[in-house]
Length: 220
Ligand SMILES: [Zn+2]
Picture 1 (cartoon, protein in one colour):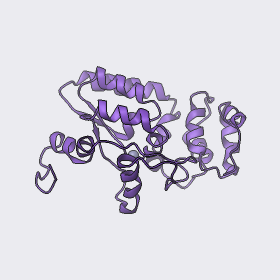
Picture 2 (cartoon, rainbow, N blue to C red):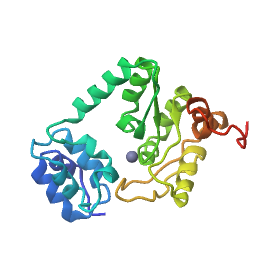
Picture 3 (cartoon, protein in one colour):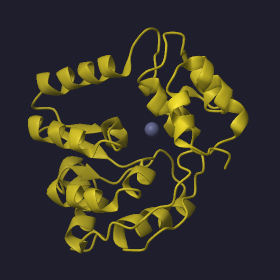
């Protein structure tokens, strides 16, 4: 890990030229820092620049996911979020499951506000485990409060990654490794969620929301 100081974060927040310079650092935390930086970055931070900045030029936009944070054909993150929120509010009889905790796993209070304002909004936890595992106490309270609104989800079927999820959601373990170093350079902590909340997260909410799922084979 070559990332070192708080001042680097400030530099990263300065604009795209600095973002690109991060490429050389092979820093596992660079994506998160770029996400941070994006909020202040200049207008030439295109997808190409973003992918270069994350050091993952061969990865697709879909893979990166967080590219929605950035500018894309002149669209900014907050514009996209506002459009999304208008859509969800405009169709109150449609249930929306927001991927990646609605891009707000780093700001659960914001997602909670959405849940409060939009009873038809739900969220899933794909690819944001690192944001929960660094704020386990707040995340635990959040998952208990909104236990009917959160579903388990992943971008891809990778059974070898599941134990990290079980460990964060189910245990009170402290300071353990995460499997994907380009998501997070920090260690994770367990949320120690109660059993009834875990069941909702893992399958009960899905059984309620998604028509046609087989109802048998799940523990009560
Ligand atoms: Zn995704």
